[in-house]
Length: 210
Image (cartoon, rainbow, N blue to C red; front, side):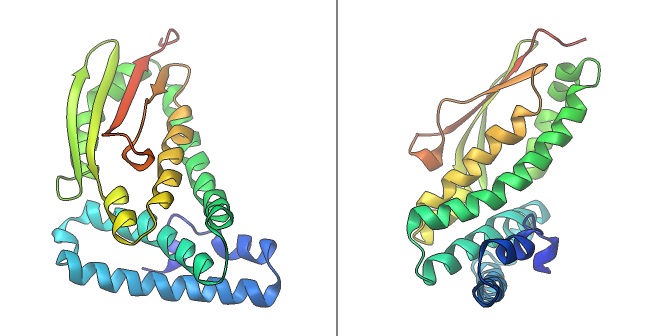
């Protein structure tokens, strides 16, 4: 996959704006090179992504490009917090785009009922058991609640020695699901990436749902 087709298509332009021209070009080229290396490594390790198209999308579009950029920054002398800040800038852009899509859903009448009707199928299709552990707690007229007990974003960042990077993915959830308000309120107490035993996802029916 071309890097421009990942969830960080604006990275090249942002790097040009954030860094000196020569430094920026070096960082972007190294990021793309590292991304392609990670793709090949992951294909070998997983046996072609367990032949799961959904899992491939997670790796190709979100996880590996983010890891590649972070590793490139760290390899060029950026400290952990500084590198995380630059990566967070990129992941937030994607999260705000997802939030806007969620706002479109929230404007539809009976948004909570529609969301509830499709959420289990969505999770099954997009978060397969090969990479995620999903436990359903409730799915009723007041609240949708499931826990994620295993997550490839946590597993892969730990394996690659950068568990701190997982937090930027966790933060993106809060931004993206915030777009569902006020008809659907997203709440969460903790995540695997932040050291909790599980990621708890709560989608509560808001007062404005007509």
